[in-house]
Length: 385
Image (cartoon, rainbow, N blue to C red; front, side):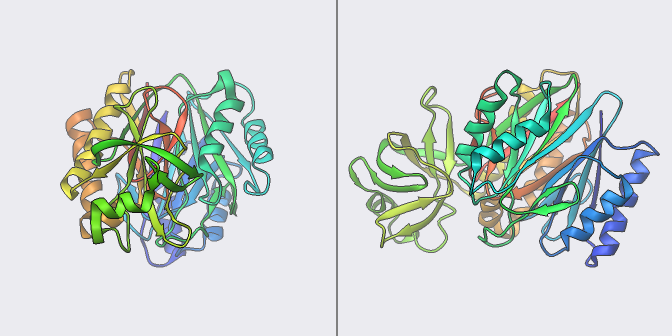
């Protein structure tokens, strides 16, 4: 398998399209791609981009997302660009699938996704989902339906530069909303996944005693708002991105997923998070400093390398959280710079890399297992022989 990356931030969409196609054609050297993933700013006309790719490689399986930022081994970090990753080679087969109207009928959308993937067990599935659905329900449903054919499922929630839920999921030449799209890679590949954030649990463990989906009303029998404001005082006003909650894994409390605090809803009497927080879960408050956040990026790569049991990775896929970019501010470029430098140091190779800043990240919590939704986390995926 080969991975080819085209990336352009030209201000004119037609020039940006021409540039990414030229870059990919040059590296393909006449070979036809088997499939691809597209990440694009919402500032571009997604329909024009997708139509151009379809004209150049008719019928190529393609999924993708609008993003809060794009990144690659070609240009590093960009906020308003197009990044196209293509997979080629005689040893790889690619299938794409979609499920529409996920909010209205999630069960049917999931059935459509699995049916579209066909038979056989993929080596890896890349899932793009909207923030309009319960992603935890999506992941449980997809993992269950795949059954023995389940493989590592990674990906992210489509985003933009605001907290808008009006984002895009790409499938072939279509720009969709409220849809699930999946790209499945088939072949004899090794996959290594790493998950890290730089945030760490602090203080005592607490129990969520009342919650409904992403709304947490009580922790240890007391109002959740009181715990947040009692610990952080007046710091928990406005943007709560710096104060995620660690939800501990019931099987291994040393492992956890982060839930980004979105808003303190005084009228409803709850703290609202960017993902489900189950009633009965063990949780901790967390803390981070910018340098610690950047160390999480490196740790994500280190963990992925430790879980990669092949000879040599051929491509790195990166899914990082829009909240990490917002917390880093003007230092956001450093996350990508550090990651690229770490690949050369730790993997001792220059790998094609592509990724995006998402509204939530998807990966297994451990080296194997069911996929879960992460917030404020960096997920690294290595694929190769």
